Image (tube, rainbow, N blue to C red):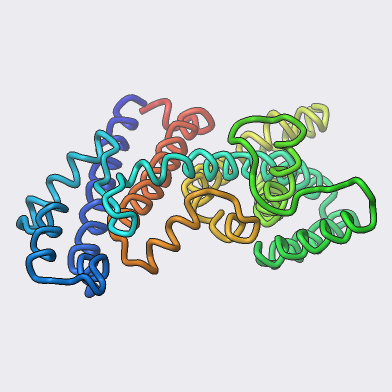
Length: 320
């Protein structure tokens, strides 16, 4: 198991280095000149050269990349062009906890609702209960998140008008990682909306995995021995059905933050979505590079968590 984890760690280090190199190269060779955009009507050749030197953009390519790579270890992503010299991390540090909080709570909703429903549908396979569940899940999964978010906002406004004194907020987030009733009112609807599509997906995936395992010979043998159905379902079937779930859940950790961009935009949540989108429009490459690297790191961490969980649910890895 130790050798298995060491191989994965070494591989992930090279993946992160590769992502940083590609991200930096794309920003370096991008057609727009951010220094000219920053100067605007105040452009002069002397001011252009002075500002380019201040941002260290007059250095050779590999020297700039080396500075960028070493700065990452100290959370130093350079300085924003759009914000005129403001450190990139100073711009992102308030939004990153919000995006992470939204993503993790949405994942928790997806798992707590999707997995039990998928198990129940597998137990009731080919009955009206199973058919109804899967039809509803397919409809929810097919609806884009921004459509559900817009519909939820319209419904909240209607409820606020219909019920005097309700005043349920339709945008913003509250204080990150605080859960007073006022904070919960801001967070509850975006989390449920963001968790809806994933919850439907995990329900269908769990059902498929469980049905495949429940049809195996060793499950029939366990039933023939007279084991209780609950023991067969959770001790024998569900443990083996976890293997594909572990892969999907762990990898999706990295995409939860990036996938929240639509939700953050619709609900006006102060995460990293608005900062990233405005930076793309302004060719603010240091901010774009920073968000890209941060999202890539979350994907890599998700893969690492997946590998660790594999050592728990797959006995073949323990024997290595």
